Length: 174
Image (cartoon, rainbow, N blue to C red):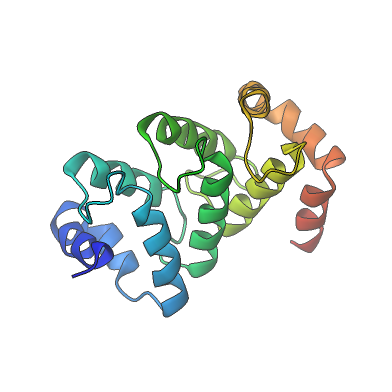
């Protein structure tokens, strides 16, 4: 049984609402979700411990539509940028930072507690724009600057919408 299949069985009792939301994944969504789940298998054992599952559930319930391929695709892209050591694993320190950034960013396109695929796409656009050396990874200074800006979210977001051409393009479509 795959890591995702095992997880789905565990979610039936540990997070039944999330399990229902993930029950009918199409092939694209399943592939994207496998990518997210694999980031929590930090030791490549093919098994997620209780803490890893809890962290994964906390991440997935932030998504407005956790079973939607597009949301999972954007989440994977965001996680790639925030993977400090580029090992495709979400280490505990990275997880804490990711959750903080996602939590702050939930206000970018709506005033609810979940992240839509548009909000994830906007966050990805912010990360790309901040990536000065085009490394597809936020360096320590770029990360620190982002966290500082997110602390003054409303003012910063207004500036970002004016100055970031990628954000302008996305907002122009919606």
